[in-house]
Image (cartoon, rainbow, N blue to C red; front, side, top):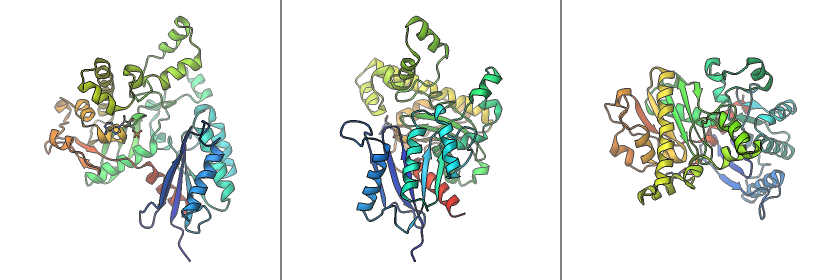
Length: 383
Ligand code: AMP
């Protein structure tokens, strides 16, 4: 009999479903793919259709959901609220609880739930596990998780800092400790996840103690299309003075702000090119992005007290030497010294880019959210 050592990871986003099949016995990844443009012309009609497409893709490769080698399905779920603080074996009751969290993540949780329902219908006998983007941040102390607003209102509506990108922060903080030759419990790490979405976290001894995203993924760093931190009064001002509706302001801050709002491009590669041609808007977008990043490096240095490493990850963090250099320039006073030669080298693996004398190690660590989800899923399914 073949051992069931494979985990199918499903990441159902608002308009796409990504999947990856990982074999936990040998670390191989026999299949991966994406079904895009859900609900758009020429794409799958809805998430259920996209999931059936994933099942057909896998069948076509002889790796179908009916394979005896499949041990479990791991589902990325964006919002776990305060109810879910770790990976959870999915039952009918768990699905109902995730449905109750839809108001906290109206774009994401419904897609995640559809993925879960379709996969459970296809393989009702198989363990299926929900891995939450918020879970790694559940350890953040109240002093950092609470907003200073009326406590009764906050409690009634679940308003607090949840944080996101948790699987990435968990994976990268652990991998950074390993790069330093330390146990996670012996390393304090600031993780800078800089992709199209971006967030920072402060991890003390393997435990997350602060993060830049909040009730939703809008707070914190400047992102591709999201503003990150703004004075909340901007919203009232736009309502009163510009006559904008709440949903219009929501779209402005989430979809037409950040790098895109500042200079018309959300891709750091294009911004780099345009800066090279002397484009002032691109330069300003870069400067605002980097300034915000430095603020969080400073803030999280104070939160941690002792920092052993700063880790850059995701599309921008892994690839943009210019962002890394600008973010950490002239921070020798904080014990941070980037090595310009190491930083400029293009490489794919986890590596150190600080000088030998730097008290704080600076690392570039490729993130691997699928691996983290598969690892959590397999641990729970084989327990
Ligand atoms: P992610 O969300 O992690 O896939 O990151 C996507 C973003 O990474 C893109 O929007 C780009 O801004 C950025 N990116 C990818 N490759 C590079 C690169 N070579 N240099 C700078 N930025 C990059």
